[in-house]
Image (cartoon, rainbow, N blue to C red; front, side, top):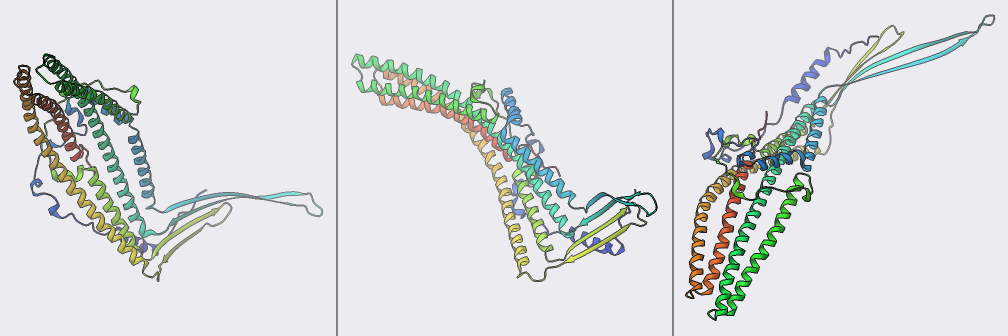
Length: 460
């Protein structure tokens, strides 16, 4: 059974055209002031400086590569992020479909029975079977549909950037956690060296005390140094367990089932870095893309507030056909509704929407300026830490030589015990400073990668 085509009539064409034109008009996005982009970053062309989407192999550690892949596959927070992103995608699909009229097809069947028996005749059965088919189309609130879709699109793009930001943040945290475990193990090794050295010096001090050439208090004070180094070792071992537990949680495992084979930061390479192409930072930082998406969503809200001053246009149409009927019925209706008096509620709503748009522009500028600042700080950190690392390596050699000289002079009785204590503290502190500098350098490289968006790029 054929259903008659829906005919809306020639008079509806101007309404559709007006609705389309009104829906296409939108509030201009506020522009980013040109001074927000630093002069030194304009016109650069150094694409090779951008990190790859998988930047962690640059540290030349197969264990780190395997760890990051496990985090990406098993991290519980990332799994929730992917589910949230899928939910946003479904919402965008619904918003896209809402731009078009909503058709409804109703089908029904009915049966009636009637029996007759003439006065002088036999009883006869009778009845009718009827099938009804109705098609209706609803297209209400026409003008607001396109701005609502624009808002949904902005929310989806914000969700994409938010998911990218979560992945970047968690991967960076995993790398930092791995580096910290190796640092702690380096410190344990250095602590063992310090403890052995302190015990050896303690034997020298006891020998002098027994010979009567040193005060008993010197022996007691050196015993404190030894115990301090032993206690530091126990604390470091506990710190390793805490760091392992944090990293295990990132891969969704128990700390008792998780461990790191690496033992030293010395096995890690420090990647070579250089400034990137800042003008592309607006497309490569997830937080900037989120801020821009919020701007576009706010613009859609302004458009909706403006449309509240116009009549609400609704179009409906339908056709019906019943079996056995000689003709089908077709009906079309169009409606205009305009609220005349609302005590300027619509005006206040429009003003509030514009104020929110201005506020989000300020948030966008904060994100942009902060992004360029982050890159500059990370680059400066890497440069300064590299220079400090060279100085600290020399300082360790000097501190070792200084302690050797002071220790020999103390053994001969020509050096005060205070100098020996000071030389020990200097060496132990310098060793730790070298390790801290290596960790800080690695973390500064990670900070630079995250400041540049971690290789992520918005796809237009």
